[in-house]
Image 1 (tube, rainbow over the protein chains, first blue to last red):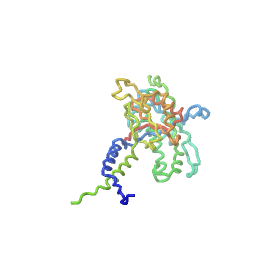
Image 2 (image 1 turned 45 degrees about the vertical axis):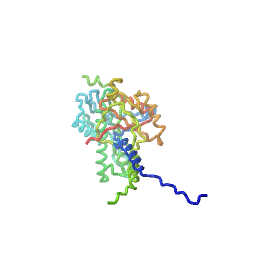
Image 3 (image 1 turned 45 degrees about the horizontal axis):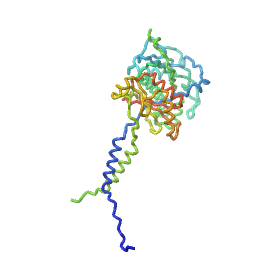
Image 4 (image 1 turned 30 degrees about the vertical axis):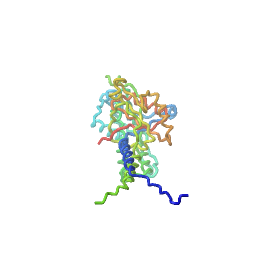
Length: 207
Length: 141
């Protein structure tokens, strides 16, 4: 009807920058850029499913680390010499664990853990440390810091061995291998850290 | 002197805004426990934050100490909880997840916690088939 077309006024966008600034500042404040890190462990499934595959493990294949409520720990039942949670002792534990996983006897024994020839995909028949078990025992009063430090050393022992093996076989660190090769290396050094139910060790340590 | 052309400023700010919106993870809980996480060397990054459930363990914060004492507490979501409640918490967390097999539980525990508490939590986690565990820690050089 009206001949002259009414021009729609343009939206005033000058406050857009202010609005987006406000939002930006809000997100800047609420954001937490810190990446969460942690030691990854896998729990065994609940006991009722596990009972049928409970097998007696040969004594020579078990490497025990018992941590007492005092924060001291004992390697392979050597209760006469409990060890403090210090960097030097943790380093020693790492070396002992590495030697054991590699197939050398435990500190106070002459029998080495059993190993067997396994046909590893991609590598052929290889001697694998598939029979060993590292048993970690804690007391209800064990401080979390010691438990964590020991776990960290045990995982480090596996990681160092895998890295060494990977460098020998593929000339590259374990982390840079592809999935298949990583799986092959994992088969040579499978991570076997078993955690027993907490036991009261106070009597053993009392003497 | 010609005026600076600011017409692209909103676009610019919007791009920064979107970047922060993407990387942001809102802290959903207010911490009611105080903890110092241990330090380690063999740590792995926690990926896919949406699949992670956090369990906080430690003594009550300074403000709440008068009311709740100094004993070790477990915090799930926004409140103190009992070990038995962990099972319900895990089930509840699972509901919002796309792939429930990827569920990871991250335990943020104070270094002075006694293992009894942690072991109890672990037992409950086993029973609820939340088997992927992450002991939260900071990198030591």
